[in-house]
Image 1: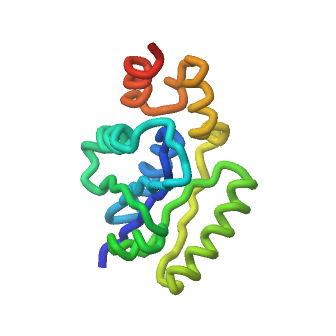
Image 2: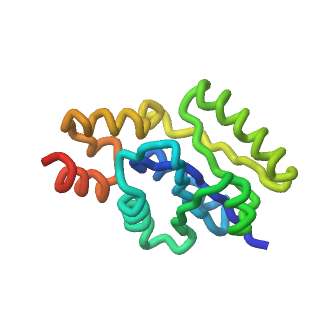
Length: 161
């Protein structure tokens, strides 16, 4: 049986912290599905198609990575794609408290068949968040230190003019 994990998020935008979590998890799983969750209650900064394309380009040479979008509970998406694991990154103790609660709820909703696996972010990435990156972009700042090069170049060429 394949060890399949879902790495869920809105990834608005995908940061170098997200990228490092996925790359570090490659040895743990046979397949990682980066699941871009669609929340109709939230207004996204970047279009869904753009976020999906960025992530696909970042991992285009990694056969163990797949990028999908979904609009359902994460545990239901896990069942749909055959994943037994949810991959999450932890930056701070506040993240831990929140993620612990979400993990416990997902475990109950998943009938104890789905485990959440947490990886600590690298120390140099603990302050990076999509929210902060969006704020820098709003004020036409340079985000090249916080997002993968593919994304930084696209933002510079298409969103900062």
